[in-house]
Length: 157
Image (cartoon, rainbow, N blue to C red; front, side, top):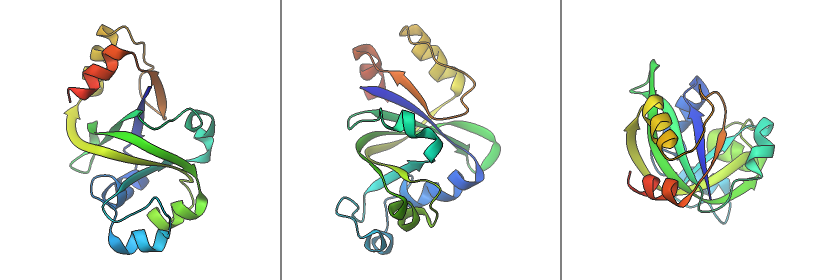
């Protein structure tokens, strides 16, 4: 199992958050996607093609921590969402259907989405205490090996 640290705090991510992450996918968008795994009420996120090597290592059951703006303030950021991956797909048409853009073709379907609030420093300290080195500052999609101790910690959120 992996833990994915997902930076989602730029303008594009901020626009996409309420479409498929912070709120469930709406009925009209799900219909437009016309995809057997996309249903109203589901959730999804996507990343750019440049992350394809990392994306290939993403699997169902992996955790994601989403680093977003807090209250829309571009200067105030934290890990505000946690979710679990249920499926992955490289699908440019699905990206267009979900986010009106082909920029995020590496789509991952997620569930167990919960709001959290943790600073980068807090996450770094917690992972360090669990013996997990992590690269900081967080600038791109980052994979962290997930030991049983890290899994238990993530489930405590």
